[in-house]
Image (tube, rainbow over all chains, first blue to last red; front, side):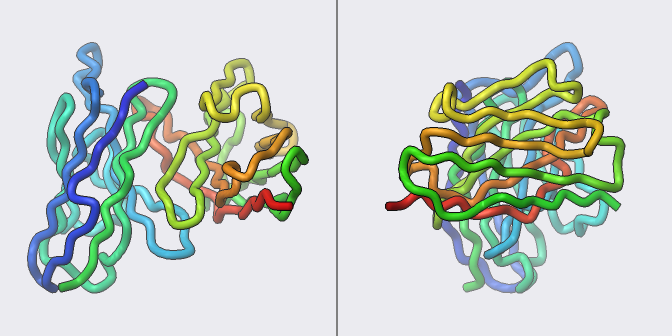
Length: 113
Length: 120
């Protein structure tokens, strides 16, 4: 099974600054025959279900602000939030869907400094 | 508009059973694989089970294998999770989620979640 590890567990960033969250998989989630990384990012606010932000490591879901971006390949991935807004306070999860069982990172709690 | 509306949560004693449902609308249900994901109170997301678009393939987390059963009724646009022999550690908010398909298998829509509490 693929283990997903996020760093840091929590971070505090000032409004308008950049937040960076990292996700590492225990094995590659890159599928060479499709040239795609099967990695997604979700945002979860209290009392709400997760919301998809990024899929295929770097494709932004429709309606997601362009201050959210994803990067990386293979086993190392990053979610970057530029120009942090108050409404970005949430827990963020990475998710590998390269193979079954699917697995999630433990989550990164983002707060305002 | 895609909607996933869950029902069936509640409080159950250890060893008991519960059936969760996820009624969908706004898309052709029998074209999509579906998953269940759970979240223990104050903790992260934990994958539970998956069913293919036609119900022919089912996969389970090791922690629930043999106790939980995922199923779907494509005539009623509804996904189910039958949970038997429940344990305290099964206490969580349970979410149904739709697989995007079309070359990427991320979860693009989620139900609102339903709380299952296993306690005596």
